[in-house]
Every structure is written in structure tokens, then in C-alpha cells.
Amino acid sequence: MRLKSNEIAACLVIALGVGGVLTGAMLQEISGKAPQSATPESSAVAAYVEPTPTPEPTPEPTPTVETVRFSATGDDLIHDGIYLQAKARGSDGYYDFSYAYENMRDFYTQFDVNWLNQETLVNDAFAPSGYPMFSTPGDITDALYDLGFRVFSLSNNHSYDKGAAGIDASRAHWAAMPDDVVTMGFYNLETYDDYAYQTVNGITFGYLSYTEHTNGLPTPSDATYGVVYLSDLDTIERQIAAMRPNCDVLVVSCHWGVEGSHDVVDSQRQMAQWLADRGVDLIIGTHPHVTQTAEWMTGAGGNTSFVAYSLGNFLNAQSSADNVIGAVLDLTFQKTTQPDGSIAVEMQDPKLHCVVTQYEDGWKNVRVYPYPAYTDEMGAAHGNFTLTREYIESVLYSSIDEQFITLD
Image 1 (tube, rainbow, N blue to C red):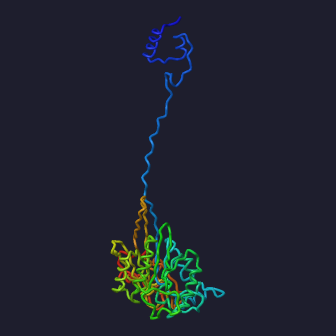
Image 2: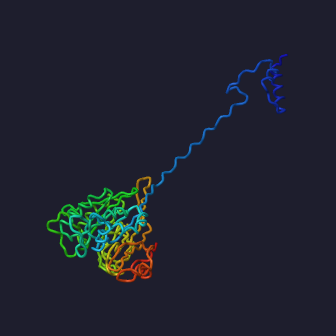
Image 3: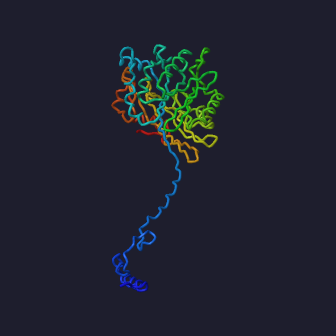
């Protein structure tokens, strides 16, 4: 029998009221009609619809941070005993300097940039010679490059030891080095625009190098290239102004001070402040052949500068105990670039690591060690004097501000 529409509705109410579920067969029984296919619009039980996800918020831009760990090493002073030993270790006329530096190899692998003051002319045009008019075989740069040095300061009191021809021969040697080698210190005497740049890990360095004097030797009259003296403030200021906009970090080397003295003289401090006032970031001092202190400075524009007044010697064959004690500057540069393009560069955690040149009686086996590898037993066998760790540390702590010393 067929139910009327009001009777069908009553049946539905009863069925649903008692928690029943209406099947197609039940509907057919009630209505006498076969169920029709359900559509999304007419289905009694609607299909589940995935809710529209809420969009993730756009992340805020973050700064880009880049770092360079930088080292600076003092006077690489090649006496005749050193190059003669290198000649004896080589063959077929090759000067093998690797033995002299080998103990420093692991130390320099820590750094992204290794800077060195090459105290002597390097070339093969002149016969090798030592004190007082130095010329060093070109083979030395094989060992220095292999050790990790890429940046070389060439302006010092021995720059004119072989006249204009010595400058030209040295420049030619360095120009033949691999492309990643950077040198500074010999400038075109007409333009003075030989600017040296290096970019590492996104940070661009600019390098300048000056000397206080050249042992009484004037600039050769036939020289095309030569040094800039620290007294030539006009040229230095012009060079700084030209380079400063093109680099993140400006490094200036000053060959200055009193040989053999741990004391910083007024002329050094005054020049360091003058450089800081013109925006120089790092000032590296060389020449005294012994260690001197370091300090932070504030420039006229509120900028922060750091100066190490003397790093002392690196490899050498001098005869005083204090001459064989040197320091390597260890400094991290951090460059932060904000999303708006603004840039800030910080110098962080400057330290001075000790290095010691060792040789036996008669200046035999000249070589250099990082301080952690140096022992009192080695010092007892040192030529000309006994060198103890206690004495080395007394020299460091009496000549350098304690906050910058590390014995690591």
C-alpha cells in the first residue's frame, strides 16, 4: 500500500527519533518507490569538504651575516744563513725553504686570510744577500704560498736595498704569482693609484702599506715605482679617500717605531690616531723586530679601529732572545647586511699568538714554531742564549696588553 505524504513524514520522524538510520530499502518500503541517486545538493548526508587552509604568513626578511678570520704576521727577515740552508736542502739550484716554515702549517689553516710583512726584496735578478742589503731568492714564495699566505706587504726600510732595478725585479716576481696573491707597498710615483683589493667570503678588503724610512736611501732618481713614506700625509689621505668607498675593511701597514724597543713612541700613536680619524679599520705595525702592545681606537667619525703596534719578527736569525719572540694577530671580521641594504662590519676578539724562531749553535737549522709546540728543552739548545717558556711569557706580558695575549 502507499502512504500519503503526511504519513511518510510521520514515519521519518519516528525512525529518526529512535536513532535509526534510513536505508534505501526502507525508503522504498515506506514510499513504494525506488531510491534515486543522490547529488551533492540533495544528499541527506553531505560529503566531507576539506577546509581551505589559512595561508602561512610571509616570513620577515633576515640579515645576511658573513665572516672572515684574518691573521697578520710580522717581519719575515731572511738572513744569509736562512737562504744558504734552503739552498743546501734543495737541488739543481732550487732553494727549498719549506723546512723553515713547516711547523707553522697547521696554525695557518685556521684562517681565511693570511697577511705577511715580507721584510726583504724577493727576486731572482740579483744574487741572494743578507744584512745589511737584503735580496732573497724567489723560491721562498713557493714555501710561503704553500703555507697559506696570500697577502704580502712590501714597503719597509729595505725596499731600496737594490735600487730601482731591485724594485722592478721584485714587482715582476710578485706579478708572476698566482692570481689570488695580493701585494701592496710599491706605488707608481706619478699616480700613486696602485690599489690592492681582495674579496673573501663576501667581505672586500683594501690594503695599503707605508714605511717611516728606507735606511737613509732616497727614492732612486730612475725609479718608476717606490714607497710612500709615512710623512707624506697628503698622498696617504688621497689614497685612503679613493679606497674607502670600495671596500668593507681598510687595512694599513705601518713600518715604524724604534728597532729593538718594546715601547711605543709618540709618533706611532699619533699616526695611528690620524689613520683612525680617516676611517682606517686595522693598522698593522712592523719594523721594531720585537713585540709591542695593541689597542682599540676611536676615530673622529665615531668609528672603531684596532692597532697592533709591532708584531715583532717571524722567521729570522737575529742574535737577541727578544728578537726570536714574535706575535701573530688573529682577528675576525663580521659583515652584517640588513634587508634594506645597509651594511655594518665589526672586528671581533683580537688576539696575539706567540711564535718563536729556533736555531742551534752557529745559527743552524733556522725554523719557526707556534708557542704551544715550544719546550724548555728546545730553548736550552737554542743558539747564543737559553730561552725558557717563562722568559717568553714575561716578554709577552710586559710588552702587550694582557687582554690581547693568548698562549694557544
